[in-house]
Image 1 (tube, helix red, strand yellow):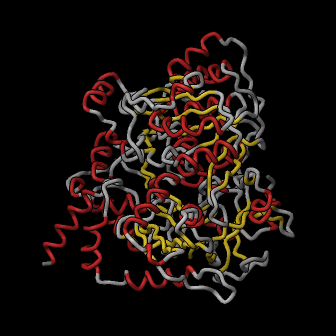
Image 2: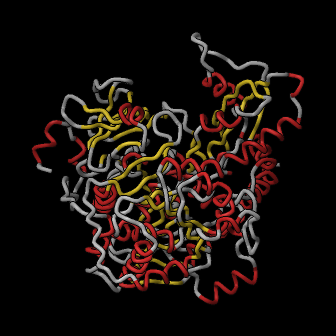
Length: 624
């Protein structure tokens, strides 16, 4: 991109770049080739660490090649879709790069997804090949006949664990760590009744890899920068889950921009890969960017906030990437009290808004623990490879999410228009640059609504988020105009939950909103109108819950259900969900002590909240 091209968009933020480059040169090849090229400079660096199993870049590239050959051996071709339904294990990232190496498209699916969600993702992506964690296979086997699946490769979370850890895992049923990921149960030797019918399509990871040993043909992906390389799932501007098409250019530009803009990442840095690989934040920031600059991704398939101190102490990470709820939990974890962490040189917060209060508290916490850095906030969407704006290394403005990445341009426009508003005026955040998605899979209408060509000739991503920009180019996030709920960093789409609830035979209509939660920030609550008010019973609630839990991922299940005889309406007859939000905000506007009393009754252990409960009990006693 020439420097002259930036004249068409105001770029006041450049004066805060320091040594950072305003423009980068992006290669016209695959995400795999970018890693292959940069890895050649540091083949002996550690690429990833999985419970102590460390692989150099040389070994990692060999694993990718073996897997790529196995994919070719079972018939995967250029432009075929390989779905990857995995937590953060080596096999998950190896499969991603191997698919990319042969020119296949990687569709990244949340392993917590419900049966019908998995079926939907497989069908809209036209997936024929699936790599999945073994505890997800039970769900897959039940919907396999309704898909185009030819082969399902199953992987155990213990597959790449060192021998000693693997034996301990097996002996003590360490899979309890992952039980919370499975709405039914962890398949530890349990056979699915319908599995016999699918045996010919199922293959274990090791047997799959062996199939590639005899594939001797040369592999050349032929992938170009603008070709679609991955599909990630997002709610878009309407809150209905859809597949986001990301190109090789998108992924590579995001990795290069992150490295350039963060400004303090170094060769051999150890990065805690907590954010999941099926999320843009995890795939791009914790994996692709790290592999680009020669760092080490510390892979964690699941972790608990209450034991996070042990992880930090064991691995001594240089970079911690997480959501605000993680950092809040760290400040409450008493096991950190006597730890010194001079090795932590970069802390990145994303996935949700970081409050001014939490930033101040966590910066003080870092200083207390002898870390030389402060927490820095980023902003982005799956539609722009997760991050496109970040707090500069040497500048911070309270409440700001930072300034745009190189070659990335932001402006604030009047809602529903392309008209730019003056600095300091609130409007919709729109973005353009090399990380902007190619569009939504099989959804031209939503793509056209989200990606719009303006008079300047550029295609701009209309985020649906409200914000402002000051005269120096610092951006301030104000809120989401779309109905998305962010709970502990996970995106929850009310429309999706409502569709399931409304399918219940007793339900007339429903409305789902986000309500405040002291730990998860927001959780979902469902308001339900029944066809027959006499059925407002616990039995009906349980029946609705059963339907929701069968069709939706656990993290999106409503925390509360409430019957209403009617729902508030707008003048044109739509459900006035903002009225319900206001009612709930008034309810939650209680003294902190009362909120904590309620929290003791509702917090679950699925995110490591036992420790939070203990802390709250202590605080409660102290206040008494």
